[in-house]
Length: 359
Image (cartoon, rainbow, N blue to C red):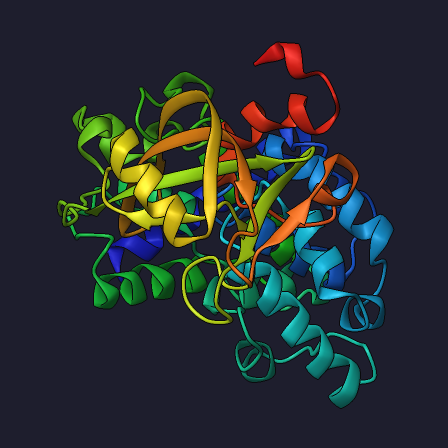
């Protein structure tokens, strides 16, 4: 047996004892189900727990079962997801729900191979569902668990390397207890989220790993885990037009595939346009600026891209592009506008609800 596995095995008993005392009280743990575990784990990808809680509660109230999610109106689903970002997660949830409803009668599969065959479910999510909801001895290894495993074992392997991640997964799997598998995985999640922190200084005096942790013993907690520097993100410059006409704002729907697929956005074009160039662009859309209300800038980070945006809030006249939708204060809320445009949405909301003096 690898010495790393032996070290991780020593953590099991104190970890579960720590979890019994300090476990987080989360809504998806109050009434455990494979469906609820699945929804929570997908929402928690790239999103903090505190932000997820109200979304999870609203989502489960609207779609309490797999079949309800499968039959949901996609626009309503995306609207409920608005603000969580990474909207492909929501679309994959519904695709998977339709498969589960049709193929499994609405019951989440209980085998690894069946789960990872569903859209949006990978190794970690499958492990979480199988261990937490079905009591199976399957690890759920995410960034938190990789960080804990690297620090406790003192491993200098790059955790972003796919081959190394498989090694860490094998270590965690071999160290897992035969009983309380779901609690073991959740204990690792909680430990990484509340004690063995990333970025800042880990709270070592509060950690059940105690003297087991090699990183603490060597004083190299902040150097582990090892991550090779990521490539710089590609920067795209955009000019965003928040066009107001008769108490309504222009929206257009993004393509069916690609970044932010099928969501609604304010019209925009590549590049950074000054007012003269922006006015020429509006002419191409059969629009005339009546009053330039405000100019603002915004930035949004995606996984591999950063948008640098210059925006204009403009009262305008004209027909606009044929594929645009003009939404007033009531109808605007029906359409999911990505958080990438939040700064522009905050500017336009007072106009749409009739509080024009705020601009």
